[in-house]
Image (cartoon, rainbow, N blue to C red; front, side):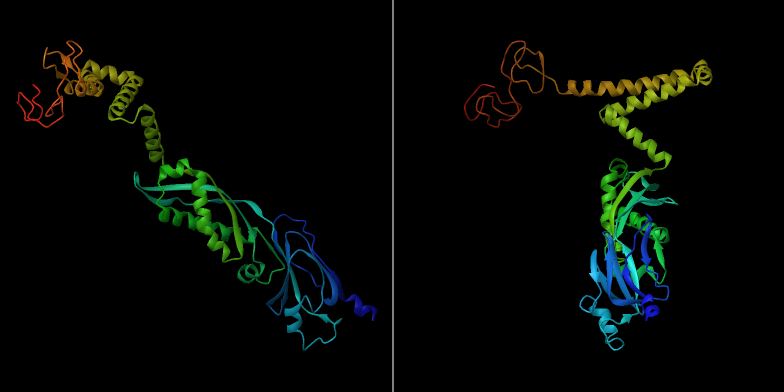
Length: 347
């Protein structure tokens, strides 16, 4: 009888000493579980009994005395075999770690092709981290675990990483987010990928707790275009500012290469180059002046130049008439009329 009792498990528990174990199968070592045994489930753990490959009872954190009352499914499966309340029962016991597994690395091995509204077809690379945890142990055991004795993060990391990377391309296509928005809003882009990926993780009994984008790499030509857009925004985002900048950049590049520029100017071609640059700059600066001159008009009394929106002449003080309107009553008048047809005011 002493030998028989030695073949029974009376205390069932798992102390996790690792940082990457997701599922731990309790080693039976040929022994069986006695009814009335004590089960201890610690925080961030779930205990699952499996009978002949079928998931039976699931226990949340706490201490339990294993009896028919808290083992309804397993007791029902073994009702015909064990009638005695103290009889042992055969079952596999798994402890599932429900804590969060943070700082899981992800990165694109090959560039992702995207269609951008401003730059056309471009390819990008990205990398960052994500965190996950088990929220439905039964679904997780059915979908991914199998019959292993232990299951670690490394065993599933490649598969989860592939889910994340495939979702990045889908997120870019569905959201229509531009390259400039991704470059300046890592957090918002990461939130989009996280929201789109949660459903795929849920089908595995997992929860994608966090998804972080640490860097997005664009082709060199796109990065150069982004830098130019930034510089143009600082200059005022006008065509004149852009022309001045390009002319200044060209002159700066020419100044660096003194040998070739000296030869060009010696042949007389440099003068044309300089004139072209000067003309572009002069045209950019003279456009506002020409526009302002085109808006000027002359006083009807003394003939002095006045602004287009001036109501009185700065020279003689005469009140100015708006084209096509009476200055007194505001009625419409024909061009060339000497008196207002409504109030008789002399125009």
